Length: 266
Image (cartoon, rainbow, N blue to C red; front, side, top):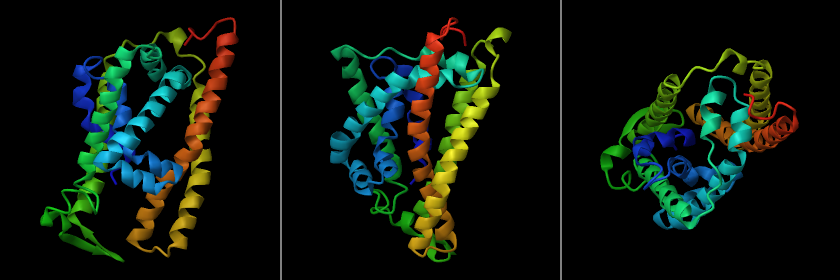
């Protein structure tokens, strides 16, 4: 599959329609919901979420859950970011949507985001709708032991890189347009870099061995072994990184709110 965090690239052009008639945060999170089953080791859920019925039955509820987490943890997460990301993103953290009107915008946005994901995957999954109907997508390109690499798989890997690059470049261009933080707002950065480094190391220390164990258990080798390691590490590492990050940033932010300076000091 194209990497989950590459999928928001397809909904970035829709930002101009936010906050009405679409919600940009919901579009972004919705574009990642079909893959959520992978991150809780429920591949059947992920497979179902990539279908049209699954986009309604699985993706929308999963999207609502992600939106709730987003609203609850946006400020703690952004507060832990180093400058200039913290100063640019923290003021954008929205209040929890308390009206029917807000959710009437959020829910369709989640669904549209999920559809964008599934449309993309329809060209890049072995059993994707377009892959099964366009013979050219099943044509072999190269033999990499032990599998034939077909066109759809090449598109999958290339679109992963392209999508991720688009997301990073779009964010960087937006960040450059934001006002530069004042000198007194950029202090105490060392602990923030160390915090994210610790999260990354802890996640990889758990995710990589689990991925290697899985690849060995299915006797994968060659290209398939490498691909399995990369995919499973990308699945297992967030299982540690996400809860650890949410808990740690919530504690840090709560302590900061109780300090005399308060959380407004960035």
